Image 1 (cartoon, rainbow, N blue to C red):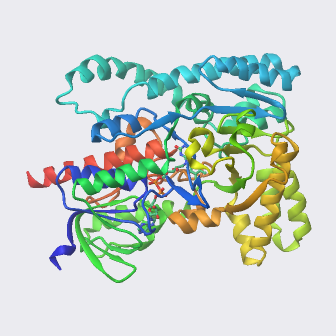
Image 2 (image 1 turned 90 degrees about the vertical axis):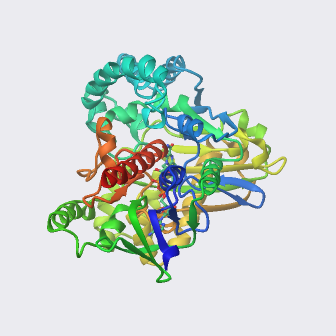
Image 3 (image 1 turned 135 degrees about the vertical axis):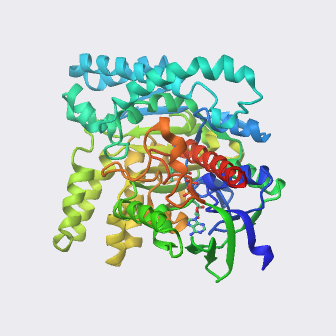
Amino acid sequence: MTQNKYDSIVVGGGIAGLTSATYLARAGQKVLLIEKNKEVGGLVNTFSRDGFQFEAGVRALEDAGVIFPMLKELGIELDFVRSPVSVGVENEIINIKDINSLKDYQQMLIKLFPDNEDEIDNLMVIIHKVMKHMEVLYGLENPAFKDLKNDTNYLFKQLLPWLPKFIFTMGKINRMNMPIEDYLKDILTNASLRDVLAQHFFKNTPTFFALSYFSLYLDYFYPLGGVGKLAEAMHNKYLEYGGELLTQTSVISVDAGANEITDNTGACFTYKNLVWAADLKTFYQQTNTNKLRPKVVLAFEKQKNPILASRGGDSVFSLYLQIDEPLDSFRQVAHGHFFYTPSKQGLGDTHWEELKTMLKQWTETSKQDVYKWLDKFTALNTYEISIPGLKDETLVPAGKTGMIVSFLADYDLFEQIKKDGWYNEFKTELENRMIQVLSNSIYPMLANKVMKQFSFTPLGIKERVGSSEGAITGWSFQEAIPVMHKIQYSDRSTFTPIPNIFQAGQWAFSPAGVPMSILTGKLAANNVIKYVKKNKA
Ligand SMILES: Cc1cc2nc3c(=O)[nH]c(=O)nc-3n(C[C@H](O)[C@H](O)[C@H](O)COP(=O)(O)OP(=O)(O)OC[C@H]3O[C@@H](n4cnc5c(N)ncnc54)[C@H](O)[C@@H]3O)c2cc1C
């Protein structure tokens, strides 16, 4: 049984777990990473179908002062290209190049909403300020990936001069924490304009996070070969450092008192430290605290209730298309990462309110009612369109185009429909409506050229990575967030009430995406190492 004893076990081989495991192995620990799927990466994944490469999760990566410093620190070389973004509403499309593209965005909105010119001008001043704050926030290589003891140049010339700016910026950011919908109501009188700006964000997204998106558009990059190359590179580095990996293995229980986990085959593994880099509700449900000190049990129970009572955030519906049309036809329309709203009318109450009412009165809702709602939902929504071949031509067969089209989608609707037995029919209806909306608007060449289509629903996301409510970035903004959500305290986000168990990833800090998952992964590894040192002393 000695081979089942580890210094650290990391549960969940998404990008957060990969980061923790790699840094722990690099520190010389005997590490086991356990992942329930066949391959690691979680929502950072590229897969192949009939010669077309597609992303299962995130479509392109944002550095955020995190990814490149980590790659540099680990000595990983990743070939990448910039992943430029286009934004479009109806027939108006702009390609975003740099901060000056904000002017094009302003002109586009004014053209669409001429009666609101002054308000749009004012909004642009605010977005510009937010972008300046973002330059401070992400303008420095994150200190978590720097050797502060030996890199005195970084410490004295970059980090220390940056700190006062950071503290000032945090003050500003914390004052922009209200939901974006409420903030926009105060400054924009036109409801359609507000919708067009905010409807592709999660409901109640904090204002700063939403308005910072223009900066994030400039930060996107794409590894050649697909975003999955990042996970692949981390995986290789982890193995190079001597880390052990078990795939197709799910952890089904944690006995925290015995420092032992059990997997789905009944095998047990013991750890000195555990990093939980998967869904946190699952952790709190599976963890047995018998034999722990009463104080720790109490703290665990206190944290468990809000965690279990909270919901995962919104999920997405993604449509995958294999198209018999060359990339050039699409290149002429927009970049390979495109946020497109086919109607300037905006969704209004269609998404959240009408859907909520429909779900509440489900027994009185007919299939026709759902499809009527779906017509509006698909016509008025904002689509995130990704064409991997426009970023790397090797990702599609010659003369063809692969496309991923997605929007935010509600887990409960899909679950309800599945229960009622018409899930596959609904998926096809939704896919066809999306194709129709895009053929009738921005991509007329799409009609009759789709060779194959398939989709991935919120239920599929839950099944794949085990995330509550199919969430893609952790907790819902519609309720109190049960984990750390202040960036200046991000270090604390990795602690659980159990001293030798740490947490990382999209559930550990809110709001989270790839950079925050990586950062918490690294911070969790740091805290494990500190904990080990403290207990040796
Ligand atoms: C369509 C889409 C678009 C996105 N766009 C962006 C974006 O633009 N910017 C951005 O920053 N982020 C974006 N994201 C979010 C981002 O991809 C995720 O937040 C991030 O990848 C989460 O990483 P993670 O490691 O925390 O979690 P995950 O990727 O969920 O990894 C968790 C891993 O744990 C495994 N696991 C779960 N339970 C167990 C168990 N019991 N035992 C063993 N293994 C287990 C899972 O299989 C999974 O591999 C997007 C996601 C999607 C789906």
